[in-house]
Image 1 (tube, one colour):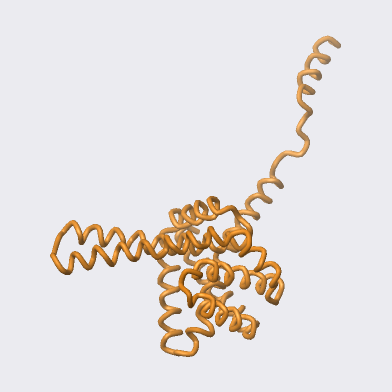
Image 2 (cartoon, helix red, strand yellow):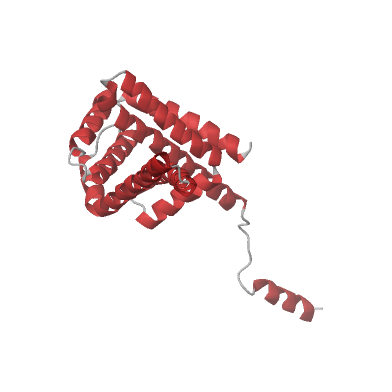
Length: 236
């Protein structure tokens, strides 16, 4: 199976698993969504609130309930990283809107090009930082979280596009259902991204296990083969 096809299947599986998580844990997921909405009202708390959602969703996925101690520990350790992540996620769309507005007002070709570049960077950054939030919730270092998210997006361009399309589709569907937007959308999207990252981690672990199982286990001790050859020579 090609990398792009594998990524496409992974996105589909992650979406199905996320919907299943919401279906089996509706009370917890609604509480997470409402908590995110309330915590994000000051706007400056958007990043830490989002990190809290990913941490809470991860605990529901792994334990079946919200582990408040784990969420508090994650926020205590990574709130500043989450704040910076959210700032960059806002900066790229703002840049795109600014230059596209200049293009609409003046017709400048340069402004149009910069606007499109900004739009591309915004789209890519949202996918990368979404996966980075998942990694932070798992306890990864901020630098590793971003670089791993970027590497994932570069290696799976088709899946990267699909992640954005699926996330936008969920937003539209929840908006049409009105009440589902604040009650379901934040936790559902976090569950979708968490499942996607979990599949990548599982594949890495399976590959490492396979490599370990195929590695020779009867390697001679350093210098042992040389001693054997030396002894065989002088016993002749």
